[in-house]
Image (cartoon, rainbow, N blue to C red; front, side, top):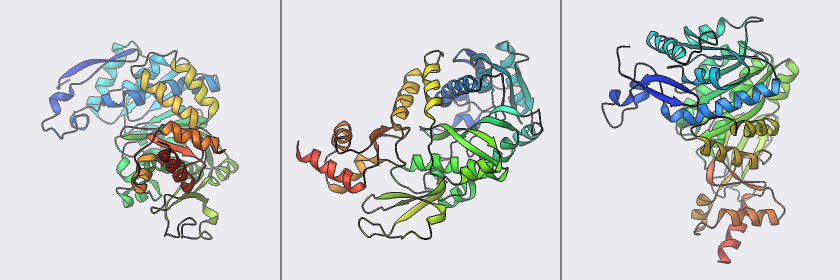
Length: 400
C-alpha cells in the first residue's frame, strides 16, 4: 500500500486500516472520506449489532448462508461475518476501488479466511446484478454506504433469495430528519418532518422506501429489527416473493399527521388521507404531515429474543451499548408509533423536567401503554394523547 496503515482489533478479527489521523488536514475534515480506502471506527457498534442480527437470522432459518457486502471498503464487516457468525458458508465483499480490493484481500489472508470470504473488485450494482439469477442469489445482503442506500435497493432486492435478509444503513440523517425536505423526497419518496421524533420518522421513511421498491418486484417485506444510533439509522427486514405479500406490505404504508402547536399526532393510511381533515382535532391548528412511510411494526419479538441470546455469546467491543439498545427496544416493540420528548412539552408548558419514570408510572396507572424508547433518552412511547401526557406532566410537577 502507498499510504500509512495501522492494525485494529474488532470482535474476533484484526485488520489493517488506513491511519486516519494522517489524512485529516483541518479540524473539520472527515477522515474516513479523505482516506484512500474507507474505514469508519465509529461504526463498530453498527457492525457489532450486524453480527448478532446475522447470527439470529441464521438460527431462525437454520441453514448455511451466502452473504454479500457490496460496499466493503477495507472489508472489516464482511471479514467479521466470516469469522464470527456460525453457519456462514461464503461472504462476498466488493468495492470498486483497486486499493480497497488489495487491502480486502490482504485482510482476508491475515485472518486466514481464504475460501470463505471472497473479495471482488466491482461496482456494487454490477456485483449484485451478477447474482440476480436463480441459484446465484444471496441469503443476506448488507448495504452500508456513506449516505443513502437508495441507489442500491433495486439491485440488492433482485440479488436476494426468497426469505432472504436485507440490512440497510442510511447516514444522510439531515434529509431524513427534515433539514433538507426536497433531498428526502428525491431519495426516499416521502416527506420528512422536523419533529422531536424525527429519528423514528427517518427509520419509517427508510423502511417505507424498502417496501415500495420490493413491491415493484412483486415482493413484500417483514421488518425484523431497526435502530437509530448516533448519526445513522439502520433497518433489517426479510423479503418474501409474491404479489399477495407485496399488497399486504403496501397496506401498511401511510402518513403521520402532526400538530406543532399542541403536539397532537396521529397516523392515517394512504387510502383515507384525502378524507382526513387538516385541522388538529385538539386545538384547531393546521396540521403538517410526514410520508408516505412505514406505519407497521419496526421489530419482531422472536427475532429480538434471538439477538438478546446471541449478544451474551459474542465478543463485542460495544457490548454495554448493544445491551442498552436491545433492552430499551424490548420495551417498545409493541408500543404505538411516535413518542413524546419531555423537554419539548415542558418547555412549551413552562415546567421543569420531571422524572421520566414517574410520568411512565402515572400513564400506566391511568391504563395507558407507556415505555421508554431507544430513539431518545427522555422520550416516552405511549398510546395516551398529547393532552393526557400534558396532564400527567402537570400533575407530577404540582406534587413536587
